[in-house]
Image (cartoon, rainbow, N blue to C red):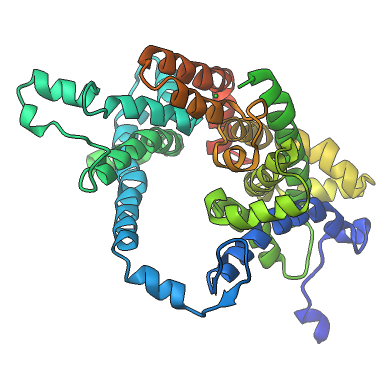
Length: 416
């Protein structure tokens, strides 16, 4: 009775051919493997060697790990990370749930504008946020110390970012401000979908902005969407060996790997490819990270579609390519627009990759240009703030026009 134990194959595999699913997956897998997983592997490998970056590498086993575990500076940084996790994730989640519970069911006029205000911190460049809060926390003229002086608490004034005791909490509060609005949006969407009878029962009971957009942002967004749609299609509807592993590689790992973790191996890779100080040095890694996120979002949407949709298309004689582009892509418009919008925002606000991989001042994007600008005009606060506004304004306007699609894509399933 061997046939009873065999898993039935997807109908798409029967018409698409044996190797077609791999062709859909290939662009995303190659990008993620080459520019994320391979540098991550080298980061892990280098940790077992003694190396100055130029000479010969000497294997020293776990000596580096033992050094860090006995280093007070590392332990202090690790403690600060725990504080950041608390203030960047747990506190925003709790606050977001409380705020969403208050305004989610209430008949409040202008809820749409509240949602826009709550989500706006997500679209502002981290460099712009750092500049603003650097001014707020400044020891001499900062807003915090000025307020303390006005209310008669001058003894509490201090350099908030200059002390190991206060800096983790000061930076953590920035994270609380940054992520609380995002949590509010997600929770409001969930609360709106809860039937009213449950509540009743409970009661009874920123460089050159144009060049940056066309040379970096636009190619990254378009290519990542194309690769993500094909990968999500294969992972959602086609049978593949080791499908869970492929899903992990093309979605979760790509989303979880931060650029800072792989920067040294990535720099060496780009140098060997001769791409340092070219736009491709930024586009390719950003493309890999964006494709992973977009694949995750679009695949989740595809999985929510009824299987009968595919069966009906097959009965009508549609091939796998036509099913994807003529049937699934138009239906998945909310998820695709969401991926496009968030990828645009993140690519525009990218800082670490262009800072390390681009050397020419004429090629660096606005966030990096703002840091260079601050170094030149450190004392002129109004001029620095003007640069901050110019850096943040394009993405704020972008979000203002696309906020309905972004929120809908983040909170809406394939079938409501």
